[in-house]
Length: 388
Image (cartoon, rainbow, N blue to C red; front, side, top):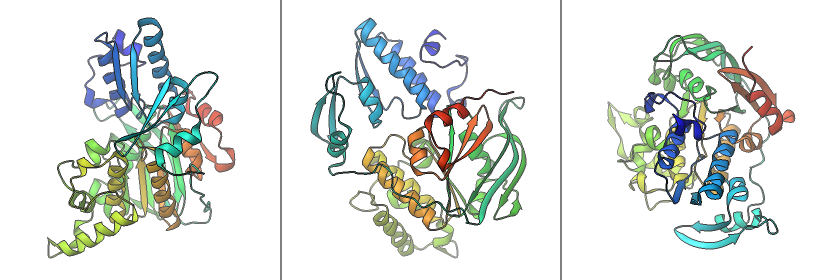
């Protein structure tokens, strides 16, 4: 319990690991490492699943380990703002090779432009593509008075009376602290794949629907790309072709038999469109980088031709170059008339790509913020509102 409190995780130590989210699982891993009184601590994307507040707490913990206990830490991260505040020196790796080193002191702060250039291998003048806001599109998704109870404890309300909508061509953000209920909200909408005693109304293109399982959600034009691509988004024992086509096999089949030629043609087209870096689509997906794995997850759902895509942490744990490519894919999907919902723990990301942002706190949607009202300070204020 003391170790969990030290990493900022106020959970009962007897709680099963499967019953907490990916972000909290990450904190448990860090607590486990700290229990060994190590002198060298290697942290691989330690804040990838954490929001800004929890990330700041963790980085402060790393500083304390250095200053009070002499612990040396090696942090592998794609979050450049964290590099600036925590690192003494930086090693940049691209395509398996070291391409540069940078030293950070109070007199010589981090040169972001130089760091990005070395990471990407080219100039990247804008972190986010330009997106034209569409305010006249048809309403594709609406939920009203949506309430979700915990699957194991029906007395716990995880999502409380939520109301939101998203239109064709619109990119909507869901912002909240870890445990706010964003993922649970998305999964409950996607065929009730999370929760119990779910109440409220769900409308797709103005028609009230009852989606009792994932297959019904897919048939209704919904897609949900999970926050945990390795655990739930991909089958790491299969290749790119098999992972990409799995949600669309019925569209590639004749009399119940998959047409291999159609499957290869469709998947290969998305490999090229999404710039998935691989020799061919028969390569095992576990051999790909995180960014390319995420593109395969997106290809899987875009192949199913949904009207509404819910993308949960779509750029978690990938480098700045791959992030930009993901943003471009999201932007193109919106331009094609898709309704896109993005869940992210990175506020600058949501501010950079979204038309509107819903803020979530303790299971309650606290505000619907238009693009002209986007500031990190205001969003954080809405994300930390207490229940009345």
